[in-house]
Image 1 (cartoon, one colour):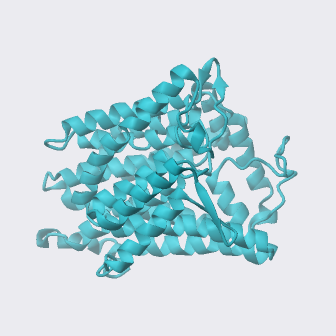
Image 2 (cartoon, helix red, strand yellow):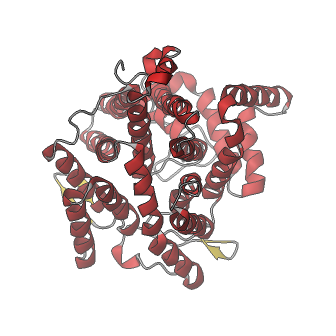
Image 3 (cartoon, one colour):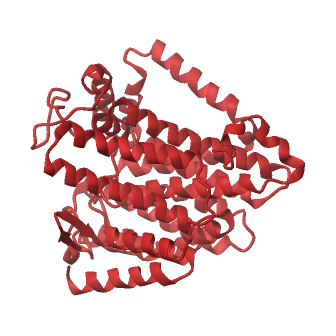
Length: 437
């Protein structure tokens, strides 16, 4: 680590350890967007970069202050734990090498701590709303830095190391900030758009909503990548369906019928829709579609214990001889087999179901909570679509698992305090009650 990296890491560690919970959560995000993965120490074979150190401080703080006390586990939590274990344990059992064991333990560390730190720090929707209002201002320097990159073609984070070489696409740089590539930097901004749009409906949050939305749009635009653009479009589409929020079951079945119709009428399978969309958003949509096609074709090779050999999947391979896996769902199957893939999908489904039940509880009260839950759902929807094109292979994983943890916390907390007049809400799906999960 260079002196500046050490100083920033210490500042964020101290903020996580001693500040109020929502400010501590902001300290974690600050480490994600303002310190590169090049700032690290190697401890017993593990690459302890700054974000991992800050996440460790978060767990230490939560345990020492007893902030998990009284936190009821729900079915999102259990699905998460099962996924985190399966996707990392299966490769260790399959390969039985120390190198794979160290790598997968590091991946488990990232997933586990990212989720439980936010699960412990943000436990209700009111403090989480304040967290996002603060985040709107926290990302302003990141947006300004990426504007600077756009004009100078140089990153201010070069001296920190750990970032990829700034690439040029059609004459424009793919700005990346402290992230390793422009795609993940842009996705970070894009998935925040639906939440900042929700803040416009909160009294007294107009400034935060405006600043946050403009900064997120700048980050998305300057990344000059198709993945962030698709994520941003998903966030806007989510809000288009806001008037239909009470009839989402019909919307979901409508989407299923449309996809089925496309599958029956297209000359290629429906998953090649990503190739068609690539013509609109740019990027290599064909690679994403063909990867899914190969994933299905080679199902017998990976369904039980995953596989380490994907050399025959794609026309081109990476330096290690395997395919470039640009899809988190495919990566889950390759690493942990069908079980890991099913558990990942189960976790996502449960997040949406909890949000839906929480929204229904507040609908008759005209509460701002319903708006906020919808914004979180829009952010998760943006993640769900984007994961078909990228595996979040740098510090962006904190945002993905942290988002799911926040949803688990705010939705289950809302359901645990349902009004007496709405006590029948949970009778339709009693298994979703946090007290029974």
